[in-house]
Image (cartoon, rainbow, N blue to C red; front, side):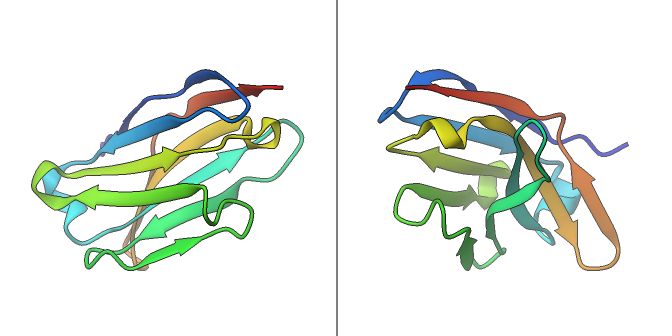
Length: 116
């Protein structure tokens, strides 16, 4: 059973910042596209940002310029730095590790709540 261990969620006021972390097993981290997704109540899960082994990044339009995804390969960890948070960013954030068609692993989710 592959575990992705997330941390860093919480409650913050609008305009504030949070940093999410996700640690993955070394055996898959190197080969994975790592991503952060989020799901708000009543909405579908959506991609927030993703990053390849070579640190090529992709962002949802709604977070461009505010969120930054990064990875430290030596620590098998991916981060999501979230700045200038808005109430509409409130959601459960999930870490994801994709290995092409071979695997697709999810973390347990961490709650982010942004108060207005």
